[in-house]
Image (cartoon, rainbow, N blue to C red; front, top):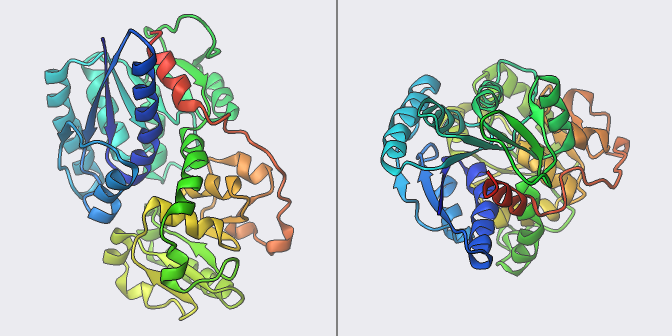
Length: 367
């Protein structure tokens, strides 16, 4: 029996965990060596619409441990996750801890495991924006440094980790050594999810009908990153940019709860062509994405989903980790935007074959 603890705490991690959880269930049905999947929810996203609704919608089982850390300053929140996760790990004594992405839950969980000499597997390893002002950049660099297995969503991430001194290995190798630090190209678990979820989304009640929207007659806008929402001057520039874009095409803006709470005054500066709505579920977001004309976002996940849905994307940041979307001509940084006609839109798939979660689980069982 292999005991694996999965740590999640924010919306993107619920989505990334789901394919891995499904792959674990599949592996257990097909093999004698079973995996015990223990799920920790740190409570980093405490708002219902940003947390429990995603568990319900995807059918993710109830977490084995809910740490209820809640919202707090960076240091306080990370410290709370570290402290409470450590207590759970000491009780559970897992063989491995799996963390996802680049949130405070990622770093806090990885630190707790590493300090207890429990191997850490980092899903979505090897990404860099080279912007140290981003808390996510600090989280991902530190997590990579203390992880034993680094599961990379694209070959560029493997190549980057190799330049940083990590060992790289082919996923087909018979044995994986946990004593060192090994980077492997598995593909992106979000692509796994996207492929299946688009079909499911089509069978769900139409969010377009409820919002009285027509396909191709609006753009989708999301904004939540601290670099944009904690800097009032920068957020005002985003408001100005989005308002200008909305003069040509109406904009739909699902408002993140933290953004709404922090920037209520600034949100009133959007014109009437920017329609602010409550947070949407994952399947509703896919419906909005696939029926939109184009996307404006600071979300890493939505940049990739726009590529997979073949929708032009304007990234509201000064850099991106997902350089493949830029290279393929589907994505452009907002300060380089010159018009929708400038997108090249090459058909590429740098994020694997849709079986990343199966590869991750199979590798865990070979350690």
